[in-house]
Length: 201
Ligand code: MN
Image 1 (cartoon, rainbow, N blue to C red):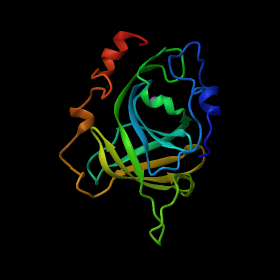
Image 2 (image 1 turned 60 degrees about the vertical axis):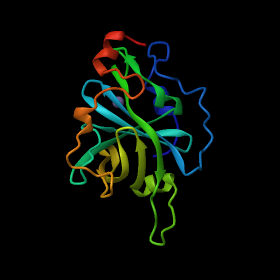
Image 3 (image 1 turned 30 degrees about the horizontal axis):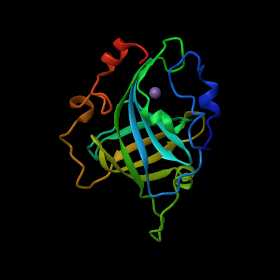
Image 4 (image 1 turned 90 degrees about the vertical axis):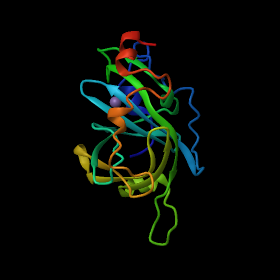
């Protein structure tokens, strides 16, 4: 997963979509331990959640059809998508139907995360290398989702797939189901349908 926005730009017409072009983003690598994450709920051709983690000056992204679970027994499919610009983390609005990813987007959850991927000697593995190796462990501090999550690549090539699994820690809770019970945007309190009705803003 190399970091660049070529695919992101190639898929979009910025005169037509309200999504950020990313041209204003500070693309310098961020080596601090805490970085931002966002989970956007996106009513495209199929409803899904987009998990995005700030790393190497972009948002590393996966489409998670069912969204994250708080139950460590649940394995959630996560399909990698193109890197997104950092300012996409605040994007909420409606992508026109004739554009790539057409449909409403809300900021379903957001916060900071810490890379907790380590090698056999307990040394931290940088996110870039962890993604190349196909295994990333993170600690998320969002409003709805927190605690340890493991992202593991299970298929490579054109059909690359990962699994997103809650780790066993004090934030694990098999009874919570935040994708069902907490459906509103953490940015505006709106639901997907309210954003869709409001149009592109
Ligand atoms: Mn999406």
